[in-house]
Image (cartoon, rainbow, N blue to C red; front, side, top):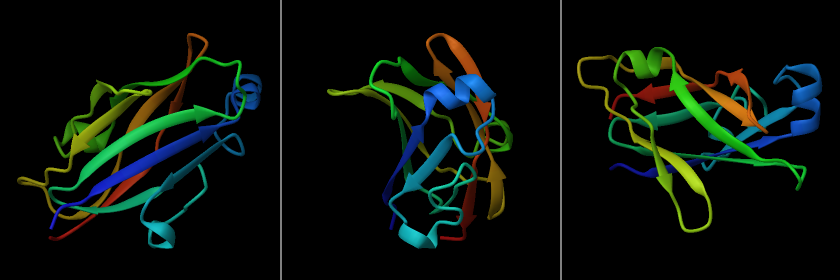
Length: 133
């Protein structure tokens, strides 16, 4: 049975802008609890299955920063496993995609997106761990 998996990215925007590195400045969470590997780190591995719906949101710990997600790419996109679409939600925009294994096999797939802070982009690359349904 498919499920919706929200994925929250929390960013120390000041530090990311100063260092350019996601290490120690970006933390990711999903609703898989500690079954998701690397929970609350910059290398979250979200466990999911074919047909699950993923929803990405982002927030900065600073209130005076314009932050967003842009330009998904990577193996999961190239292999047509996910195809994120921007949705203008009631409170905030978010990205969503259905997991589609199709001709691909279960396994770990990298994806990337840009974290945009005040019009400057910083690349970032977590993973999906897709199990057989």
